[in-house]
Structure formats: structure tokens, C-alpha cells
Length: 413
Image (cartoon, rainbow, N blue to C red; front, side, top):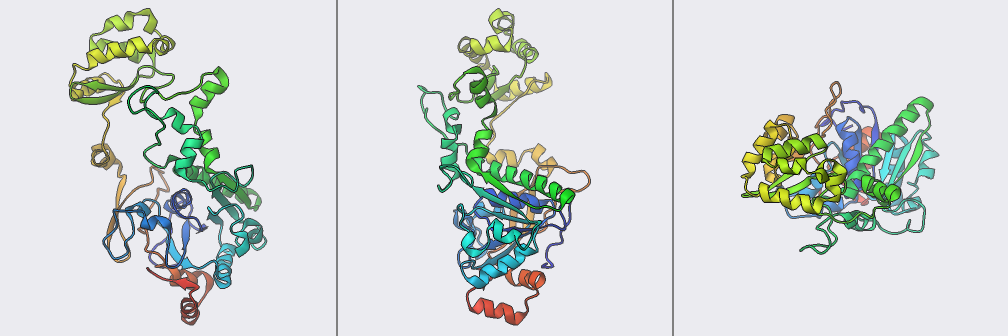
């Protein structure tokens, strides 16, 4: 492979052919790359991944790549190959024959016409692990629909429990502020891929993985779905309040909002003592979490009256000293400058091949023996095309020039 990235880590030696774009698939392949896999990202010549244009902001290095693209594409080699050209599809089939994992997020059946579907590729690579990510899965009445994070957040029921309570100012369906359905589908795809790798290690057998955004987001309804399935409680929007645990929400201090997250009866009594509201702790209605939840409409205003007299920093400091969970609502700049995040080393400085500096958020899992590594900044579109085709397929300069001239491949946009 190209000599600008030495693969190290627990997944070193594995090759991922990444045919996916936008976020769910690239998020999965980036995690695999962070853990040492060699990731070959396939992009469309002249266009590249859609997220390269999802700005502003854009990098000012001549690539015009959007900051959005940078969040999910480090530790990858970018090749620009026209799979609609029979010769381009043949190149990708050859790469798939030498790969351990293929990842794609085309519409159901969309890759069969190129011979890049699972059935075609496993015929030449029986040990291949092939993961498809779609909005609704490979079967069912919705299988041919396009799936997008925003739609999935609404269709899955997530928006029905996100936002201000009905009847309050600003109520109505609200999406999460990050594309959570895409991101978690990417994580579940990674989990499934690692499970399939373990199966292959034991049996030599590859397999097909079908990941759907809707399935993933519905699975993340967790306690809200269980409340309905097992208790008949129809979940609803509660703003920042918790459907089961009270008090577990934001409160207004004299100078701004704080978060209070009390998970048990002991913490509630300790917090009441801190506030000087032993009367609340002694009220039999609030002695248990079930009682506090039932009578939250009486309890929360009484707590708010007292909390509103405190300065936020003072109350948070007192809670910290008492071992009670609380904090402030940070802005993105505030949390990225936070000393805890700095100590954990989550913000990483990288350089693109031309020296352009970029910052990325690192892999959050801390492996004691085989940590994640940051070997290659998010690449320019097609910058590794020639190097990958030389190293992986043995093409020479004449072959590459002919393919470039014919429009089958391209290099850096």
C-alpha cells in the first residue's frame, strides 16, 4: 500500500473496501481504520463523497473540502474509480477479491449491475464480510425507499419524545442536534463486522450483514419503548425531564441553567439538604422515585423556587463537593476547551498530504495494549488512486495512464 500510512493496531492486516459515502458507512470504516485496518475509500471521479461539498465551512487549501467531510474520513486511502465503466467495476472486483470487508450503502440491489453485490463477490472471495447499510433494510415493504437520518429520526418515534412538552412554547417534533441515526447505525455496523470477523476466524466463513437505519433507531428507543411494551405508558415529550427518574433535568439558577441528574433516593435527600429544603426530603410523596415521578408537577416548581436563588457556579461546586451529579450546558467551543477533554486527548491535530492542518475528534475507546492510531488525515479525493492500484493490483505507469485517459480513474480533484 501507499507508504504514507503504516497500519498498526488490533485490526492491522485487514483490508476494507469502502464503497459507502456520506456518514453511516464512513463512520463505520473510520472506526475500523482507527483500530488499524487498511481502508480503501472508493469515490466517484469528478465528484467524490457528497459530504465534501456540505459546507460552509470549507478548507482553504484548494480542495474546497467541507469540514463535515473531515469528521468521518481519516485513516483512509481515497481512490477515484468510475464503477459505471465496466473496466472500473472490474478493478473494484479485483480489490474486493483481496479484501476482508466490503462496506456499502447503495439502494437495495444497486450494485448488482456492476457485479459488486455480495453474491457476485463471495463467488471469488468466500471469506468476504459484506456489510450493506440502507434506510430500511434489504427486505420488507419499505426496502426500496431512500433513508436519511432526518426522516429516520421522525419515523422511528425518536422525535415524539424529543423536544418541549406538548402545550409548552416551542413544542413540536425536534431532531437531535447531530445525525444520531446515521452515527449509531455506523457503530452497529462496526460491531456486526467485528462479530463476523470472529466467526470467520473460527470457521473461515464470511457472511452478509444487513444494517438498517430504521432498525437501529428503533432499537435505541430502549427504556421509552420498554415503558410502553411492558407498562402501557405512551412516551411523550418532556423537554429535558426524564420519563422515569425525578429530578433529572435542567433548572434555572439566578445566572443561568444547570443540569441536575439524581439517580436514587439517597442522592435526592442529600440534594435537598444542600438546598436547605429538608421539607421536601421529609414529604412522604417524595420519599421514593416512584412518588417523585407521580408528583413531579408539585415537586419540580418547589425545587425551582429555591434553585433560582443560587448562582450556577456555586451550586455546581457544592454538588461536586457532595458527590452529587450536576453540571452546566456547555457550548461546543466550551467543551472542546474543557480540561477533562484536553487531559483525555480527544482533539487530535493532523496534517493532510499537502501539509494543511486539520483537527479531528479521536476514537473514544482507550485500549491499553492496542490503542487507536491517527496515521492519515482525511484525504483529498482520489489522491491515492495510483498508489493503491500499483500496490494492490500490480498496475504499472502505462496501465494507470491509460485508465486515467479513458476516464476510468482520476486523481486529486
